Length: 254
Image (cartoon, rainbow, N blue to C red; front, side, top):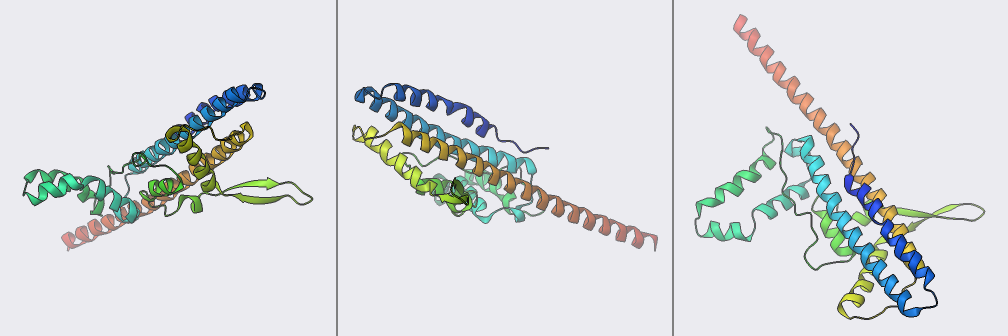
């Protein structure tokens, strides 16, 4: 069965709205005021949609892992730690210090993450950005929760430089994220009008689209690898159980 991410399909459709704002901006080149407003609106909309896509994709990724029902020992240690941190939070620690017996409920929730005799059916990861936080460092933190150390090192995008010999150049997408975030902060928090052009918006949209595709490809690859590992693990356990049963039958016959 093919691995699909609905969040990516929705993102690709939704960012077409940016094209409408870019088109209107091109039509207002002689009106600096309108041109500025349209470019600012396009940038804010693009960044908001991109961040929403990252959260949705991560949420779908967790659902895909849960659907596999993997054994705990093939899961990322980072993922387990973040699950623990999410469930055994400050509220849990406070109750534990006061000997509140309600702490057993969250403990029971996370025990399957470490019991290799069982399949994991639930994972507890916060798939949202930290409130009010933006920029490439926050994107890195978001994906660290699922075991990807640096998402910008893991997911790379390129552009072809046309010459006598076409060459591929790496795009520093983390710099794109920071640039868009800086513009966002100037617009929202300082109420200024940075000198944005529609060409910049087009480039940010192009790179965001490329990164979204590369990200989904990476997540799909991770899920496929997890499925294979889990299948091997399950087959080995089944063979072991079968072997034990056979030995018991032989002993009974004797």
